[in-house]
Amino acid sequence: MNDPVSDPLPLLRARCLALPEVTERVSHGEPTWFAGRGTRGRSFVTYADHHHDDRVGFWCAAPPGAQEAMVAADPERFFRPPYVGGRGWLGVRLDVAVDWAEVGEIVTDAYRAVAPARLAALLGDGVSGRTAAPRRGTP
Image (cartoon, rainbow, N blue to C red):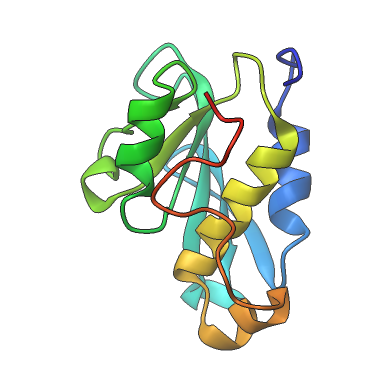
């Protein structure tokens, strides 16, 4: 785990934009990343800088069951975000100690959850790194 950084947005942005055919634009007042070019891309990560609460973090698409498992395993780092939490999206805090390698895995899984099959296939084996249970070593 790394200590929180004063501005986590550039680190999150780099992980999102490293994925195939990702675009960034502002949605609901926050930077949001979309899988697929043009206006038909689907959002997979939204930055949340005190967006409706006192947290700095991001909201992202998640594989089925991941939100519940991760929030239960570590509610200090993970949460059910407003609005999209009911659809299984995961909230990830960036104003606490952050494991940036894990954030990269979570972002990649979010991308896989919404990207068209042809784009998800560009990531390799197509197997999500995150399952319904947290990885070993995750408190």
